[in-house]
Length: 113
Length: 110
Image (tube, rainbow over all chains, first blue to last red; front, side, top):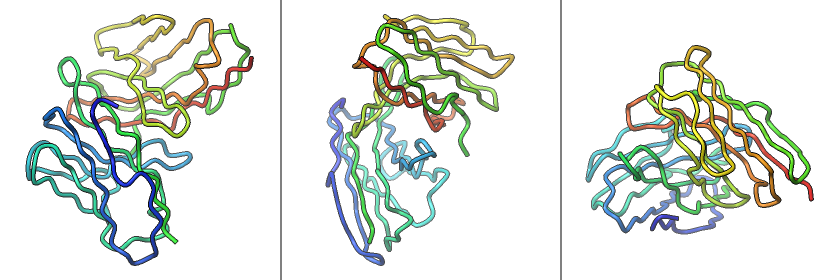
Protein backbone atom coordinates (compact mmCIF):
# COMPACT_ATOMS: atom_id res chain seq x y z
CA UNK A 1 0.00 0.00 0.00
CA UNK A 2 2.86 2.39 -0.81
CA UNK A 3 3.55 3.31 2.81
CA UNK A 4 0.02 4.53 3.48
CA UNK A 5 -1.77 3.52 6.64
CA UNK A 6 -5.25 4.37 7.79
CA UNK A 7 -6.64 4.25 11.29
CA UNK A 8 -8.91 2.97 12.55
CA UNK A 9 -9.58 0.21 10.02
CA UNK A 10 -13.09 -0.37 11.33
CA UNK A 11 -15.34 1.84 13.41
CA UNK A 12 -18.91 1.71 14.64
CA UNK A 13 -20.35 4.93 15.98
CA UNK A 14 -23.68 6.53 16.76
CA UNK A 15 -25.49 9.27 14.92
CA UNK A 16 -24.44 12.72 16.08
CA UNK A 17 -20.99 11.64 17.28
CA UNK A 18 -17.88 13.30 15.85
CA UNK A 19 -15.47 10.90 14.17
CA UNK A 20 -11.89 11.43 13.01
CA UNK A 21 -10.12 9.18 10.55
CA UNK A 22 -6.38 9.34 10.11
CA UNK A 23 -4.25 8.82 7.04
CA UNK A 24 -0.50 8.54 7.45
CA UNK A 25 2.14 8.40 4.72
CA UNK A 26 5.85 7.81 5.08
CA UNK A 27 7.18 9.30 1.83
CA UNK A 28 6.50 13.06 2.06
CA UNK A 29 4.18 13.26 -0.93
CA UNK A 30 2.57 16.61 -1.42
CA UNK A 31 -0.91 15.57 -2.54
CA UNK A 32 -3.25 13.55 -0.34
CA UNK A 33 -6.89 12.66 -0.93
CA UNK A 34 -9.91 11.35 0.96
CA UNK A 35 -12.55 9.35 -0.93
CA UNK A 36 -15.65 7.49 0.05
CA UNK A 37 -16.79 4.35 -1.74
CA UNK A 38 -20.40 3.28 -1.86
CA UNK A 39 -22.06 0.56 -3.97
CA UNK A 40 -22.93 1.85 -7.43
CA UNK A 41 -20.98 5.10 -7.01
CA UNK A 42 -17.36 4.13 -7.35
CA UNK A 43 -15.04 6.50 -5.52
CA UNK A 44 -16.11 10.03 -4.79
CA UNK A 45 -13.68 12.70 -3.69
CA UNK A 46 -14.42 14.29 -0.32
CA UNK A 47 -11.44 16.61 0.24
CA UNK A 48 -7.85 16.80 -0.88
CA UNK A 49 -4.67 18.51 0.22
CA UNK A 50 -1.83 19.97 -1.81
CA UNK A 51 0.44 20.81 1.10
CA UNK A 52 0.57 21.50 4.81
CA UNK A 53 -2.50 23.55 5.73
CA UNK A 54 -3.55 23.66 2.05
CA UNK A 55 -6.80 21.81 1.44
CA UNK A 56 -9.75 22.01 -0.91
CA UNK A 57 -13.19 20.50 -1.29
CA UNK A 58 -14.17 17.61 -3.50
CA UNK A 59 -17.57 16.70 -4.88
CA UNK A 60 -19.07 15.34 -1.61
CA UNK A 61 -17.56 17.55 1.08
CA UNK A 62 -20.72 18.49 3.03
CA UNK A 63 -20.54 17.20 6.60
CA UNK A 64 -16.78 16.60 6.43
CA UNK A 65 -13.75 18.67 7.36
CA UNK A 66 -10.04 17.95 7.01
CA UNK A 67 -6.78 19.08 8.47
CA UNK A 68 -3.16 18.68 7.50
CA UNK A 69 -0.79 20.11 10.09
CA UNK A 70 2.20 18.06 8.90
CA UNK A 71 3.12 16.47 5.58
CA UNK A 72 2.64 12.90 6.68
CA UNK A 73 -0.82 13.12 8.24
CA UNK A 74 -4.18 13.98 6.68
CA UNK A 75 -7.17 13.85 9.02
CA UNK A 76 -10.81 13.53 7.98
CA UNK A 77 -13.44 14.56 10.52
CA UNK A 78 -17.13 13.84 10.38
CA UNK A 79 -18.40 16.70 12.47
CA UNK A 80 -21.66 14.99 13.47
CA UNK A 81 -21.93 11.54 11.94
CA UNK A 82 -25.11 10.58 10.09
CA UNK A 83 -26.25 7.21 8.78
CA UNK A 84 -25.68 8.46 5.22
CA UNK A 85 -21.97 8.65 6.05
CA UNK A 86 -21.79 4.89 6.54
CA UNK A 87 -19.24 3.98 3.92
CA UNK A 88 -15.73 2.78 3.22
CA UNK A 89 -13.23 5.62 3.30
CA UNK A 90 -9.99 5.54 1.35
CA UNK A 91 -6.99 7.78 1.60
CA UNK A 92 -4.67 8.18 -1.37
CA UNK A 93 -1.46 9.95 -2.28
CA UNK A 94 -0.30 11.17 -5.65
CA UNK A 95 2.99 9.61 -6.63
CA UNK A 96 4.80 7.72 -9.36
CA UNK A 97 6.49 9.07 -12.47
CA UNK A 98 5.35 12.67 -12.91
CA UNK A 99 3.17 12.19 -9.86
CA UNK A 100 0.24 11.29 -12.08
CA UNK A 101 -0.99 8.13 -10.39
CA UNK A 102 -2.60 7.58 -7.03
CA UNK A 103 -1.72 5.01 -4.40
CA UNK A 104 -4.38 3.99 -1.96
CA UNK A 105 -4.47 3.03 1.67
CA UNK A 106 -6.30 -0.10 2.87
CA UNK A 107 -9.51 1.74 3.75
CA UNK A 108 -11.58 2.40 6.86
CA UNK A 109 -14.99 0.79 7.13
CA UNK A 110 -17.32 3.11 9.06
CA UNK A 111 -20.78 2.19 10.29
CA UNK A 112 -22.98 4.93 11.71
CA UNK A 113 -25.92 3.58 13.69
CA UNK B 1 -19.77 14.44 -10.60
CA UNK B 2 -18.33 11.23 -12.01
CA UNK B 3 -16.53 11.63 -15.29
CA UNK B 4 -16.11 8.02 -16.33
CA UNK B 5 -18.71 5.33 -16.79
CA UNK B 6 -17.72 1.70 -17.17
CA UNK B 7 -19.57 -0.88 -19.19
CA UNK B 8 -20.56 -3.59 -18.44
CA UNK B 9 -21.26 -3.30 -14.72
CA UNK B 10 -20.43 -6.97 -14.27
CA UNK B 11 -18.69 -9.61 -16.34
CA UNK B 12 -18.32 -13.36 -15.76
CA UNK B 13 -15.85 -15.34 -17.85
CA UNK B 14 -14.12 -18.71 -17.89
CA UNK B 15 -10.46 -18.95 -16.94
CA UNK B 16 -8.33 -18.52 -20.05
CA UNK B 17 -10.84 -16.29 -21.83
CA UNK B 18 -10.32 -12.61 -22.53
CA UNK B 19 -12.18 -9.90 -20.62
CA UNK B 20 -13.02 -6.56 -22.17
CA UNK B 21 -14.49 -3.57 -20.40
CA UNK B 22 -15.17 -0.07 -21.63
CA UNK B 23 -15.06 3.40 -20.16
CA UNK B 24 -16.73 6.52 -21.52
CA UNK B 25 -16.07 10.03 -20.29
CA UNK B 26 -17.43 13.50 -20.92
CA UNK B 27 -14.75 16.18 -21.05
CA UNK B 28 -11.20 16.63 -22.33
CA UNK B 29 -8.60 14.72 -20.40
CA UNK B 30 -4.88 14.79 -19.78
CA UNK B 31 -4.72 11.04 -19.28
CA UNK B 32 -6.90 8.07 -18.42
CA UNK B 33 -5.97 5.45 -15.86
CA UNK B 34 -7.21 2.00 -14.94
CA UNK B 35 -7.22 0.65 -11.41
CA UNK B 36 -8.03 -2.74 -9.92
CA UNK B 37 -9.66 -3.39 -6.55
CA UNK B 38 -9.69 -6.79 -4.94
CA UNK B 39 -12.44 -7.43 -2.44
CA UNK B 40 -11.92 -5.51 0.78
CA UNK B 41 -8.73 -3.81 -0.41
CA UNK B 42 -7.66 -0.42 -1.71
CA UNK B 43 -7.34 0.37 -5.40
CA UNK B 44 -4.16 -0.54 -7.24
CA UNK B 45 -2.96 1.37 -10.30
CA UNK B 46 -2.71 -0.77 -13.44
CA UNK B 47 -1.93 1.42 -16.41
CA UNK B 48 -1.99 5.03 -17.60
CA UNK B 49 -2.60 6.15 -21.16
CA UNK B 50 -2.04 9.75 -22.21
CA UNK B 51 -4.40 11.74 -24.40
CA UNK B 52 -1.94 11.60 -27.32
CA UNK B 53 -1.61 7.81 -27.15
CA UNK B 54 -3.97 5.34 -28.81
CA UNK B 55 -2.88 2.02 -27.36
CA UNK B 56 -0.74 0.77 -24.54
CA UNK B 57 0.28 -2.67 -23.29
CA UNK B 58 1.41 -3.95 -19.93
CA UNK B 59 1.79 -7.70 -19.56
CA UNK B 60 -1.64 -9.24 -20.22
CA UNK B 61 -3.31 -5.81 -20.23
CA UNK B 62 -4.10 -3.82 -23.34
CA UNK B 63 -5.64 -0.37 -23.12
CA UNK B 64 -6.97 1.69 -25.99
CA UNK B 65 -8.04 5.32 -26.02
CA UNK B 66 -10.22 7.07 -28.58
CA UNK B 67 -10.36 10.75 -27.69
CA UNK B 68 -12.74 11.52 -30.58
CA UNK B 69 -15.30 9.16 -29.02
CA UNK B 70 -14.23 9.93 -25.47
CA UNK B 71 -13.86 6.25 -24.71
CA UNK B 72 -11.31 3.72 -23.54
CA UNK B 73 -11.22 -0.05 -23.30
CA UNK B 74 -9.29 -2.42 -21.08
CA UNK B 75 -8.58 -5.92 -22.34
CA UNK B 76 -7.28 -8.63 -20.03
CA UNK B 77 -6.02 -11.60 -22.02
CA UNK B 78 -5.87 -15.22 -20.87
CA UNK B 79 -7.69 -14.44 -17.63
CA UNK B 80 -6.83 -16.16 -14.36
CA UNK B 81 -8.75 -16.62 -11.13
CA UNK B 82 -6.53 -13.93 -9.60
CA UNK B 83 -7.97 -11.40 -12.07
CA UNK B 84 -11.30 -11.58 -10.22
CA UNK B 85 -11.72 -8.00 -9.01
CA UNK B 86 -13.42 -4.70 -9.74
CA UNK B 87 -11.85 -2.50 -12.38
CA UNK B 88 -12.19 1.28 -12.44
CA UNK B 89 -11.30 3.85 -15.01
CA UNK B 90 -10.24 7.29 -13.81
CA UNK B 91 -9.79 10.44 -15.82
CA UNK B 92 -7.22 13.10 -15.09
CA UNK B 93 -8.28 16.54 -16.26
CA UNK B 94 -4.94 18.11 -15.36
CA UNK B 95 -6.10 19.57 -12.07
CA UNK B 96 -4.45 17.03 -9.76
CA UNK B 97 -7.73 15.22 -9.18
CA UNK B 98 -9.01 11.97 -10.64
CA UNK B 99 -12.64 11.25 -11.45
CA UNK B 100 -13.53 7.58 -11.05
CA UNK B 101 -16.27 5.58 -12.68
CA UNK B 102 -18.51 3.14 -10.83
CA UNK B 103 -16.45 0.14 -11.95
CA UNK B 104 -16.81 -3.21 -13.68
CA UNK B 105 -16.88 -6.33 -11.50
CA UNK B 106 -15.07 -9.21 -13.19
CA UNK B 107 -15.50 -12.79 -12.03
CA UNK B 108 -13.20 -15.43 -13.51
CA UNK B 109 -14.60 -18.95 -13.15
CA UNK B 110 -12.23 -21.87 -12.81
